[in-house]
Image (tube, rainbow, N blue to C red; front, top):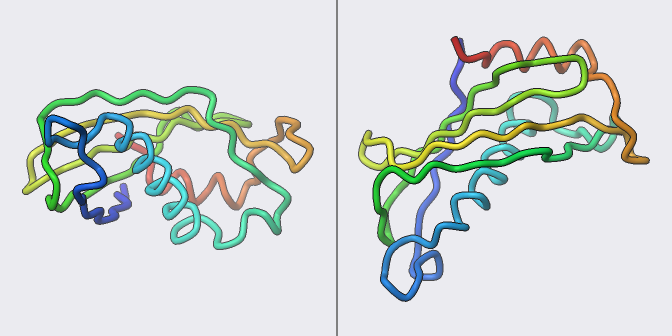
Length: 132
């Protein structure tokens, strides 16, 4: 099983009035990791294939507080790959400690936003990152 990894740096703009990282930033980072995963590991031009990703469900579990200027390692694995959808599992680490973990259910659609089957070549690449 492969694990996709992406580093994220936090800044003052990511924090709230209490000085810790604002909760919504984790959802933004999930999107960054998801998009970079598809570009770097699946296909570098999904739009040319006539495909879009629709987020059906997203969640994040906050485990440990984080502060600005920390470096985060985001990891991504896939799960529950079906004909038209899959789940992605995204974990965030700081200094090898799990600080948050999230999941997204993603549905594939065409450019008219009609649900469509995941192409076999893309499904094959997604399965390389399948969580055990």
